[in-house]
Image (cartoon, rainbow over all chains, first blue to last red):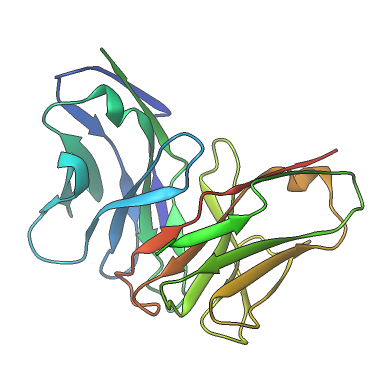
Length: 114
Length: 115
């Protein structure tokens, strides 16, 4: 079965430091992977996605994610965190077994301290 | 261009009452989705639609019904609300007609409290 896991409920980082939000996945076939961000009282916003090609994917707001097939991971990264990056981050994987579903992780809350 | 909008933003219901949540998108997207978001569980798919006049069940469809009479609107109904349906409901539409790499665009959410 397709699944995605975000092992950390919360990540704390100081402003200016690099940040990593972890995601691992389990799919059959080629993985289609996504990161979405949710700011307080808002809907989810698309950050970036991996379809194929380069393992390093660049997205919005300076975020990037590294696809690692051998470790089945798709970690979200940013070289220098901002206080405004504080939000809830969701990793997602596309169900590629013929359905029209995207499977979301439980979410990781990022807290960036000034 | 408003994107995806949802009404109402917040609602309190008593057990057994009914209500309809409205989702509207102005991006001419074929695919639309209803999710519920509960703490620690991410988003779970309730129902989805691949086009006007079509609907299908998602992961957690029980207690909900949907209709897609117009391409731009996707309605989620609760016929007899239960406390277990207390949640935040998100509507989304998709720009890639169900292709694996589709990006979903989300509305701001409806917070529902069932007493």
